[in-house]
Amino acid sequence: MSIRPVKRIIESKPAIEGAGVKLRRAYGFGETREFDPFLLLDDFRNDRPDDYRAGFPWHPHRGIETITYVLAGSVDHGDSLGNRGTLGAGDVQWMTAGSGILHQEMPQGDPQGRMHGFQLWANLPSSLKMTAPRYQDIKAAEIPEIVDDDGARVRVVCGEFWGRRGPVEGVAADPRYLDVWVPPLRRKVLPVETERHAFAYVFEGSGTFSSASAPFGVLTERAAGASETLIRERTGNRSLVLFDRGDEVTVEAGEEGIRFLLVSGKPIEEPVAWYGPIVMNTQAELRHAFTELNNGTFIKQR
Image (cartoon, rainbow, N blue to C red; front, side, top):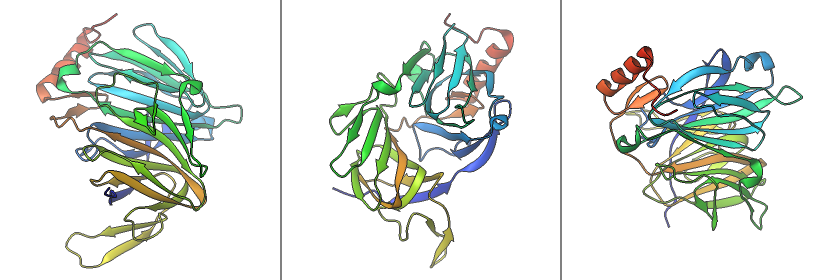
């Protein structure tokens, strides 16, 4: 067994999306080869309704899958195919945009005004870019939760882990999407196949991941061409850990415990032509998609 060393630690950055939703972006809209097949991860966490109620009105997607995981509050959604529904706390929606869909997502928050969730974008290979759109709406009760002897908990949203399989099926990237909680001061080893790209996104507590040379609250980096290590203070919360190759991730929780998403997938290794919510393989395909969007022929399935 080989521990995956920490390749890089990234603090999520404030961003505004949709009609003015304030969120934190862990990564996206840049160079994403290290994350392939994943393209973007947003953390939409807020306790001020004015910062999220405007939501994400009607917008297109093509060539990707969007994964929405709600922890607090609710999200009303609808699309150009006539689907309507509401995601509540603990629910997941895995949307395959495929050949094209128009949809909207409108966060509502809980009775205390709190809203928290994540949206992950997964790329589709060229052979499935124009596949028929589909939804997989998963209720919280359908997601298996494993409780280990030491109190660690893992919700298996997608993929197989510790003998349990998540309810999301038939996804091109064959991803594993886990919600992991490790109790205070406990150490946990989590398997991740070597051929997968993998990252963890911490959203509660703090801890130490494998080869990090200091507690997770301290970001350790080596400057290009420098012979000494630079250390800058960072909080573990809302930070992303990108792992290098190996077949297991090791984490030791801090005094508050640690909770994080552990996401891994097999790289597609294809060219990416990306503008906004549409991701194709070539600039010509991208231009064609926007031409269809402008002339009303974008939606292929009704």
